[in-house]
Amino acid sequence: NVLEFLVDYTSMSPAEMRLNSEAFNWHSRMPPIFEEHDEIINASKRQAENALKLRRERFVEELEGYNKTVGGVRKALEMLRKLADISRRLRLLILAWRLLRRRSSSSTWRRKRLNGKLLSILCVRRLWMS
Figure 1 (cartoon, rainbow, N blue to C red):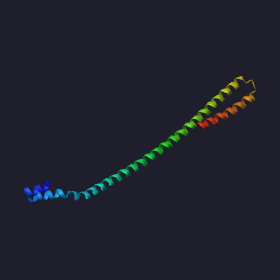
Figure 2: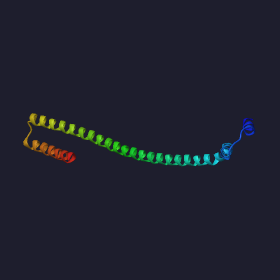
Figure 3: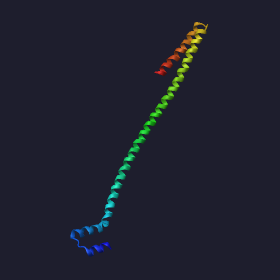
Figure 4: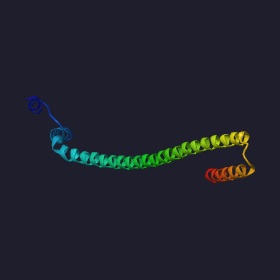
């Protein structure tokens, strides 16, 4: 209605007519523009997904590396605990041997035998600790 009124009661130049016709026909040009924007969005989405997959793979690899490190540390801690236990037992053995040696009124032959056993145990300890 408003357009009919304007056409009936105003005179428009050819440029104004062209502008008005473009304004009424703009909706026919919109679908290709929307399709182009959809393509741009989908391309950006694919790029972001690929980047996220790559970051996820790197993160998983990093976690696996940490897991190996933690596993190695756990094994090392277990070995350290075992070595500490062996060291404690050897210290107790040395103390017991010294006590036996002090209290012993046995012959020299028995002392040599005890010294030989202790020497072999100490050699094993040095080999184990090195």
